[in-house]
Image (cartoon, rainbow, N blue to C red; front, side):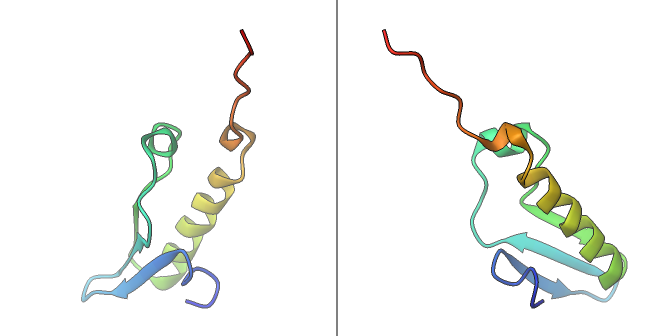
Length: 70
């Protein structure tokens, strides 16, 4: 909760855990493999999934491409 609570709303269910982004991603992020919802059977599995999401967010594709001046 401490590590991901600012970006995700984390909830326990009877069957596991899920996290929903506090702010929806733009289509560009979704096209590059990011998700608005992540799940895990255990809190540890959810943490690993959120860590993977963080890794994807920090990849170089996230940088805005330069638009050539005409």
